[in-house]
Length: 251
Image (cartoon, rainbow, N blue to C red; front, side, top):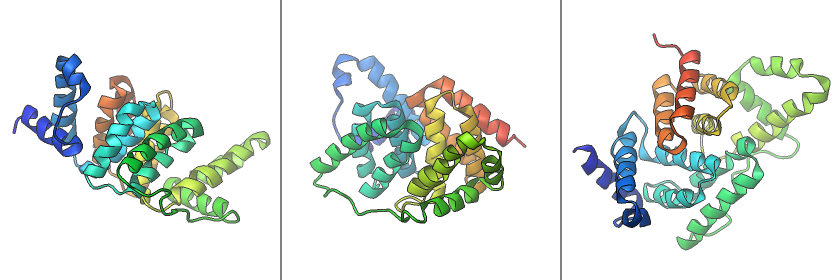
């Protein structure tokens, strides 16, 4: 199949038969969009459609492009993602984009779930308690990043040590330890989130190393960032690729 045929097949798989409103008002633009995203990008690299939709969800959440997010929640269900997987991907954004934007996205997800008769709330994926969230979070943090975590904690000024504690207990304890998505998936999604933010290249590099440490190889990272391209543009994509190449040089 050529890319036009591929794009039609993929679009129908994700969204069902039919056309968007933009087909009527901006047909040329919609054609460019469809052929590039669904005829080329979706076929680049080694990720399956479930992972691609998870990546799309977190980038759209980060960008707060909520109408498109809502459409892709439906697409995510259509390719076989569970409601829990979808919710956990959106929850994973909170430490990086803040609660208000994450709540905006959760509202969109819930609307789609309700229209599909999915009962809310979903089964809890919580796996830590108040007395162990710090320890479990720190354990996960060290699993991803290694000895550098101890050095970061030791080197933090006294008036900023609480930030290091929050990283361990909140970011990694409250979110990374949850069920629904495995560690490799969460770390790959986090790379996409911080790449989509723009201006967070230090964190992108850290999460490139984190992905490598948990077993996501360079080709997987390149494919993931390539999949982000239509949703975050070339500048942030190229910056993220530069970070990948710096941390994992070509042989």
